Image 1 (cartoon, rainbow, N blue to C red):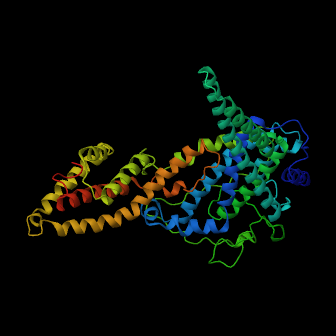
Image 2: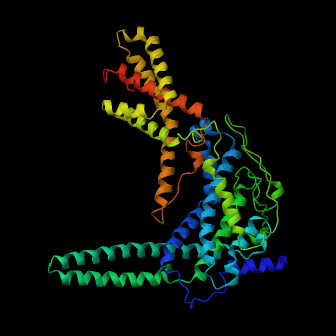
Length: 468
């Protein structure tokens, strides 16, 4: 039985037995397939050795993430892993849906093959992966995705030309020669791109390419994050059957993650100031028969989406991540600006605050004026205080603002991804304010707003304070 499963998996990875002469082509579904291909390629590239090391040494160790989110690397890597799996799950759902239109029997059962792999039933070491074959598949997918994106743009341009032609015909404008030439050229371009893109490709060829990379991506996720996420399937890949991932992702350890998994050593796993990594029991390895195996898995992921898993004491759980991000970015802009802040800007900043934070800000400002009253009437008129607050603000904004920008960028990339097939995702949710401790974040925001008020008041850049 095991040999039969591995044989089926090899057939799946090889691209299936579907013929290119099959009349079952993607056509309009090419655009959805191209978007999925782009996402898979981006996900594959994000799981390289260098990217993993950069994640551990960069965003995960930034001052903002360490202070507001956690210093527990196991916890943070668990968040990154879950986000990668969710991105992969969306691609798997598309590939599974397209696979039902395949002629090849093994490709048609892609959902079962993928589910069996996630349960550890298929031994990845027995599947014929090689760096050369995977590299070629990635190149083909990039080529098809780019050509399909060009096809979409050409179709839009053709539609605009034809609409303009109709308008001119109604107005009896004599420019027929120009539009005939332009439209003829554009139609030839569309015809060429339909042949070069996914439009004319069979379901078997398209699903064969994507299914291969889906399994590679899943195996990479397990390899990189396995030591930190107990719920992942235990995937062992013998050294002689490397999955284009014969790499040492831990520079401090002299061993390869893909060999002798029992020698894994967890580094940098210290408890954070807010939350500790959760210990989840591994999923049981069982076979799941039936064509709806994937539906079960996808529904489970959607019910436990990462964005809904923020603990109760976090900014994300309070639904304030994007509001606070906009507030912090606005405050940073005011701090960097050499212009005075008008009433409208002050009002906008104040309205972004919840009632509890407005009250806390008023109390803090009142106490600040009483505390520094004597220095305000001194010879320098509070210029020393202004300089002190400016230095303090420089430090706070230096680590707080990047998290705010990443919060807005994360949302922008997800929104843009719904429209543009090649939209890249550069920010993980762990880098944002979503998992930040609410109390610490609000304290930092109040400190920034009080500092801005003091700087503007003491420097006599305007007559009233900024936000009250």
